[in-house]
Image (cartoon, rainbow, N blue to C red):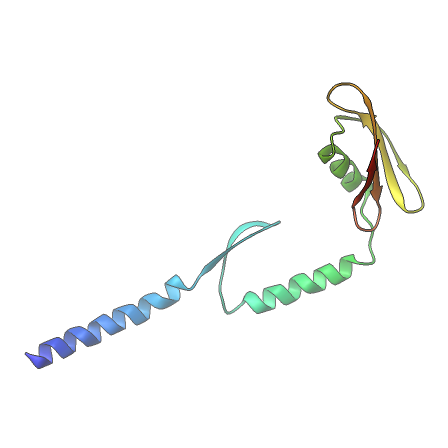
Length: 115
């Protein structure tokens, strides 16, 4: 009787131990979408993301990015995009047909002003 209980306990422990790695996966939701993440590789992925971020520090956003940001601020139709020394100025109309001008920082992509 004791041997039977011992055998059942060993089998139960083995079943639980083999199921643990399957439960250890994580889900990461980011700019690349939803993906499964292995907890062992999480640190190396974070380091790679940090390096990519460092590479982007010296770069500027492009004209397309400036238009995308301006559209998020309410620009419906883009009439002109002007590049100044430190910013992009996107000129267009909003959904009501009124003129709108959005100034966007070239390095960070932050909205400086909306008129």
